[in-house]
Length: 139
Image 1 (cartoon, rainbow, N blue to C red):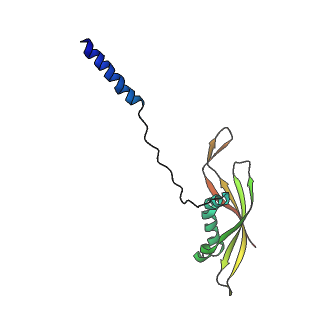
Image 2: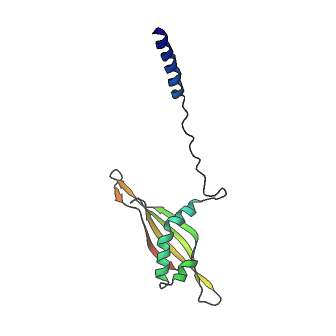
Image 3: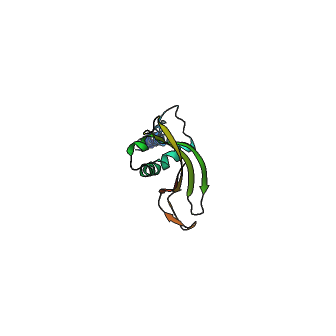
């Protein structure tokens, strides 16, 4: 009986030792969208505010869908942080005028407010994510 007890004790020691050294599964590598893709903060801002500006360009140019297809951002003129936990972003956009001969473009100034979602009594804000066009100036 002693031999069987010793045998099972040794067997359990080896069995539990293997469990203690079990390796976790290898984590899957997250591959980037493209190896040579470079993203700037300006690209990120553009992606966030693009839909709001797109709707406003269509509204400003008489609902002509073709005006929204060609507009492009020229540059960010300024970013201001407000005390209500939002950001005002001023930028210049180029809107093509395909009706003119030769085709021409107008440069407009747009001011957009981005309000990130916030729910904190500590800093006094309670609102969801919102992007709104504050000003639109034809130049």
